Amino acid sequence: MSWLANKEEIMDALKGVFDPEIPVNIVDLGLVYGVELNTGIAKITMTLTSPGCPLIETLEKEITDLVSSIPGVNDVKINLVWDPPWSPAKMSEAAKAELGMI
Image (cartoon, rainbow, N blue to C red; front, side, top):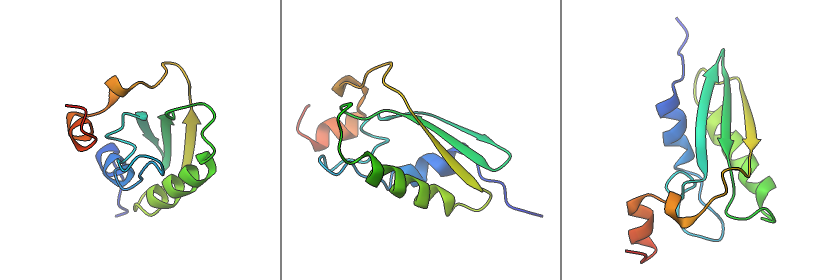
């Protein structure tokens, strides 16, 4: 029997990807809007803190490498969106506390 990945495993893996400019992972920053998993393909819908982020290629590689390492994930597709735009309100309470925002 082959192992099937699930969305929770993918979200946990994404918590290992940190924004290069802010020492908080992309999930707690509120950059990940959704994860879909269909026949071994993980589709991650996300945004960035700003459209001009020069480090998108670095983040995409990190995301792809981490999520691809999950048994049952055969491919990773990143859907980068700008609507809705990111704002600090999307951050988790833990991320806000870590950055001294609460």
